[in-house]
Image 1 (cartoon, rainbow over the protein chains, first blue to last red):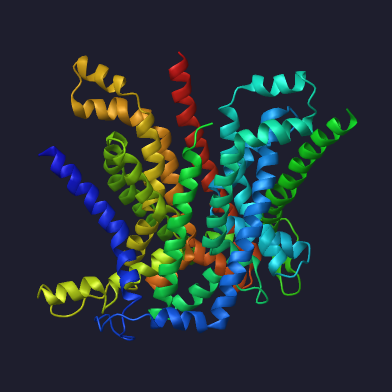
Image 2: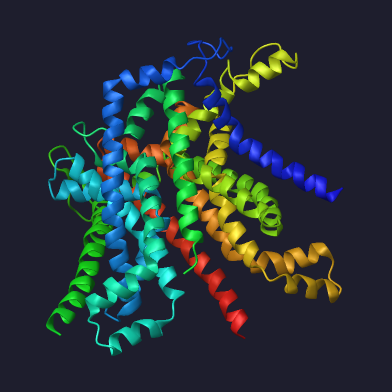
Length: 255
Length: 284
C-alpha cells in the first residue's frame, strides 16, 4: 500500500516537471498557428526558425559566448581552486567564502553590480562586457567543483612529485591537472549551460550590438505564444538534456 | 627554481586580482551608489545619505517589498513541502533506478528557466491545456482566467525552482546515516518524534540551502512575473530592474539590491550555523 502511494507521489512530481515541457515539444509540431487545437504534424516552424536570420544570429552569439566563457571560466576556476588548495596566502579564506557567496547571489544582484562596474569603467555594453559577466557568473561553480575534487585526493601525491624534483608548474601540468580533469570538464559543461541559460545577467550587461538568444526569446515570449518559439524551446530542451547526460558521465568516472 | 616561484606568484596574484575586480569592487560600488543621489548626467551623484533607504520605506515601495517577500516565502514553503517527501523517496530508491530518477531531476534543473516559464503559459492560457481539459470534461463552462494572476506567478516560480529545492534535500537525505533513525526507533521514539528530533536536524543544512536557492531567485526572477503575472504582480526584481533601466533612479535600485544582499547574508549565516552545529556534533 505505502509503496503505491510513494510511486504515485513520485509520478505526480515528474508529471508536474515534465508535462509542460512535453506539451511544448508536441505543439512545436502542430500545423495550426493560432489555436492549441491539433491540426496535424508539420516541421514548418523548424524551417521558419532556420530562415529567421535575426534569431539565428542571436543563437550563434549565444553559442559563441557560452563556449568562450566556459573555456575561460574552466581555466580561471581551475587555477583558483589550485591556489586555494595548494598554497597558504593572505585573503585565502576570504576568497573561499566569497566564491560560495557568489554562487548563492541572486542573478539580479550580480547583473546590476557588473553594470555599475562597466559604467564606472565607461565600457560600452556588448560582446566584451557580456563575456566578462558570464565568466564572473561561472568561475565560482568551476572553482568549487574542482576544489572539492582536489580535497578528495591524497596530498602525498603532490608532495612525492615535489620531492622528485618537479617544479610548481610541472606539478600542476602533470599531476594536478590530470587528476582533476573530469571535474574541469564537468565545470566546462556547467559553465556552458549557465551561460546559455542566463537571462537576468545578460539583460543588464549586453547592448544592442550583441543580442543573445535568451533575450531574444524574452522579447518574443512577452508578446504571447508563438509556434516558432515552441520549436526553438524544444531544441534548447534537447541541447540541455544532452549536456546533462555528458557531464553526468564525466563526473561518474572515479579517479 | 625561479620559474617555480613565478608560476606560484602568478596564480596567487591572478586569483586575488580577479576576485577583487569582479567580486569585491562591483559590490562596493553598488553599496556606495546606494548612499548617493540620482543625477541626469552620470547616473549617480556621490554622496552620503540614507535618503534612498528612507525612500524604500515609503508606503508604495514597502508594499512591493513585502508582497514580493510574501510571494517568494509562499513559493519556498510549497517547494519545501512537496520536495522533502520526494527527495526522501529518491534517496532510498534502489540503484540503478535512483541514478535515472536523479538525472530526470537534473535536466529541468539545467533547462533554461525562461523556456520553462514559457512552457507554463501553454498550460495556463485561456486556450491552454488545463482549460481545454476542463472544458472538454464539462467541469467548467467558461475558460478559467489563470494567466496574469499572482497565483500564476506562484505556480510559475514553484515550477521553475522546484529542482533547486529537491537537489540539496536529496544530498542531505542521502548522507543521512540510517543508524541514527534506527537507534531512535529502538529507544522507543515514535516515527513522528524521530522525524522531528532526528531526521530534520540532521538534514537542516540541506533544508536551509534549498530554501535559499528558491527564496532568493524567487525575489529576483523578474521575467517570471512579466510573462505570467502581467503587470499585476511585481517582484522586488522587477522593481530593481525598472530603477536601472526605465526610471533611471540607480541609487534607489542600488539600495533595494543592497537590501536583497543583506537578506542573503542573513540566510548564509543561518546555513553556516546549521552545518557547523552538525559538524561539531559528529566530532563530539
